[in-house]
Length: 239
Image 1 (spheres, one colour):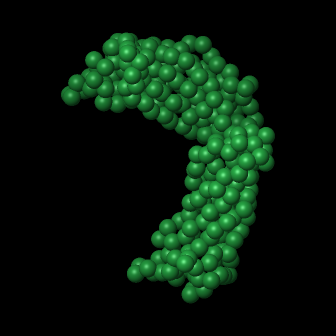
Image 2 (cartoon, helix red, strand yellow; image 1 turned 120 degrees about the vertical axis):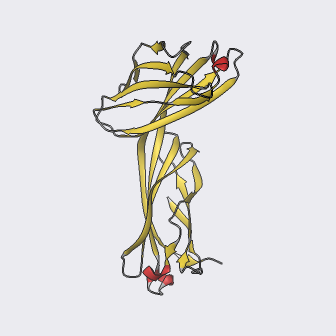
Image 3 (cartoon, one colour; image 1 turned 60 degrees about the vertical axis):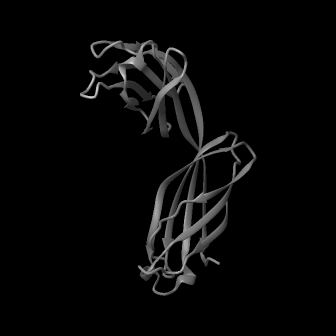
């Protein structure tokens, strides 16, 4: 990683400054990088923390041996008083984590015909011997006062390895009987070693007529950390 830009603004009427930080990320791993998380700590001339930002995510596509420029998200509205009038001595510590994605198509699931029924994907699925999907249940709600219903999934996922997964995402897309997309949703969570989660994507405010012969398609996306970068840089006043 190379930090290519790090500037700060002049204090505004509220005595606050803004920052702008850019970096070039080189993918030296053997995997395609599809998610980056950044963390920034801002310190004054005495090395004391004034502000920071953490776990900011950027979806990318960086192939092996390629590079990409990204904006490092930084805190906004930082009180200039924390720097004791020494704005020329602001320093940023930047930490970046790189993640690869493993993708699995769980297939299709029929949508229940009413709120008293459920449909299932009963077959368990193994993703790279690390993550197991242990079935899917699909339900729908009784129509509300506006005559609309909700369709929800419950997807059991277990991490059977000693690897920490930053994000496991379940994506759910509804298609009508003619193949047109009706709605979509996704939900995610982290997955610690030897840990289980239930992911519950759902689609709201659906007219029952649109759900006739409707099909849901489900995919699972697992992000695993494969690389780390750290650097620091002194900030300069923006032009």
